[in-house]
Image: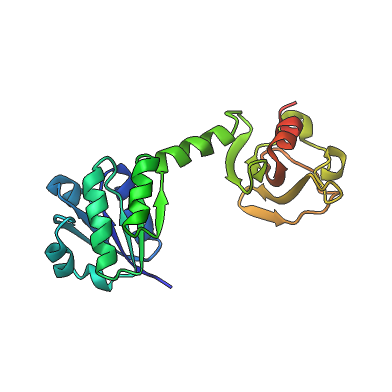
Length: 217
């Protein structure tokens, strides 16, 4: 079900988030003090407004109190992000996500009422590091510190061989193939006898160590 979302701060992170939410059919209000940033968002969100988010009057005039979610994406503007977060929760907004620059900033945001605090740069760095910077890694989602879901291009030695032969079938509980992407088609829960072809992409779940050992040798 689409939500009404307010994104406060239309820098690179806020603008990308607001655009993505709008493309996912949410009603998105973007707010920033910089008129150029606001103008750049016209047509990319439902509404884009130049306003001071540290003003309760301005927030109420924009109807923020009636929205479902607010994201405070003010980045390095630490004082403004804290004030804005506090105002949003005081106004009764049900869910407020705030962007923090460091752990101290995050602690203060939690204390003034933020329901969720995020560190976009840190999370992006961890995500990039988890790909091991190898040519076979395409994407990664962590499950625990040691395990995750990996999307990979099979190296040359795997092509023409079955999942069973490569130890990527269901009998191997340490590394299991969930999906084979074959062009525009997807083989979900493939059989152990499925043979890897040129251009195939595998989605496997297992330990990072096992993935590296299997796909990089």
